[in-house]
Amino acid sequence: MAGTPALAQGHMGTPQEQNACSRDASRLCRKELGNDGAVQSCLQANRAKLSKACSKVFASHGM
Image 1 (tube, one colour):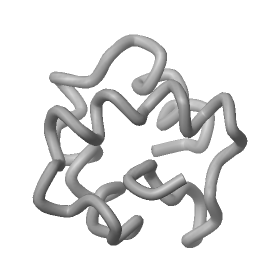
Image 2: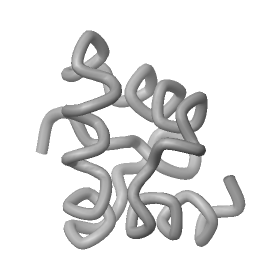
Image 3: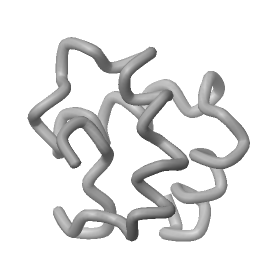
Image 4: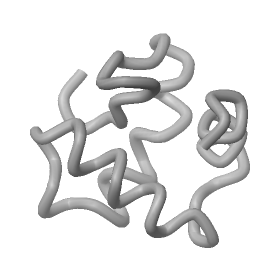
């Protein structure tokens, strides 16, 4: 799924993880969509604005 964050070492998250962050990626990182690494960096830079579900995904990966 394009526009979802790449997690741990460029590996795409599970479908559930992708779903948890897809709205945040679209809302906060629109310019980076299609570049998973850039979306991940953007989401990390906007941690305070992430939904609870997406924030949990990053926390579960130690980010």
